[in-house]
Length: 138
Image: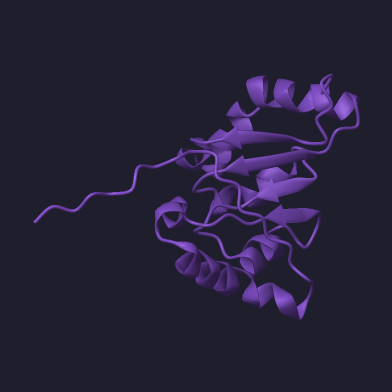
């Protein structure tokens, strides 16, 4: 933040392994610390968890302005589960990074189509990991 970050994204990669009850009981320590510092500086927070469909309302209770949805959660379904409060960030299946632009664009269109009825979706693709292209041998 001191270096000029406009937003902070918290990646809670294993959160989907928890039940709602365990999430609420265990979420306090590191997650709250990671959220409090940016909040003091007025920096918005994106909170992303994988396999988190059942946890979305609880994740919104953390105070994050944006909830990141993994590729298994349709944007309209995720946003509805948050009672349309705040914003959601969509993500495409990471395997698309090796499938070419045509497949990526088709997936983006499918993913954002349901949202066009209520809002003009903005969708970003950020590649945070590089996967080697598979080499098929015969």
